[in-house]
Length: 276
Image: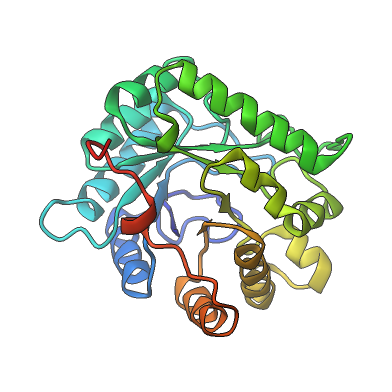
């Protein structure tokens, strides 16, 4: 899953792709580099990020989604990274087929019914607190057990709202309300989330825990990103959300050859609207 941030303040590339044409070109480049999915977001969820009004978020993402998900030459299926029904609806109208919600359908009561009605794939992520508060002393009894229980409860809530279970993916939320040790424990024990029975999405790309381990700034975390994604794949991840698609894709090719772990394929594993 290639990341297309249409924001001025994302932690890793804020402002680089705020211009729609640059964002569209970037999305096409990521697909050419091997992205099976493109995740388009118009609101930063970095620690401390300010909230963005729905109107501004729409202005940022809809032109990009419409171009990348166009019926004639779409480079890859598109997801919209949003927690707002007012954004998700027009994004789905523009061609997105996945809603990636970092709040796991908790922030907007209208989002779950919308996703159920539109029969789209929904990505439920764990986050302790909000982007404004999530890194203020996050605590758990057992980080893996607690997150597994949370995701199970959100799967139940989503299905109760009418979202088909086969349309649900889960994400443990690396870096979202976790310390370095929490993130490492989640990655070590990622396989314990397999009993949820849903595809697992992992996003470690360029995140601060890699900087804490390596002493490198955002632009120097490629090695840590590749290593953590390879280990996540081997541990049971299905989908890897990354910035440097080309480098991670090459690493996965080597993993497949050595370990026999097959990189994720959208056509094989993603139920699309109307597939049943």
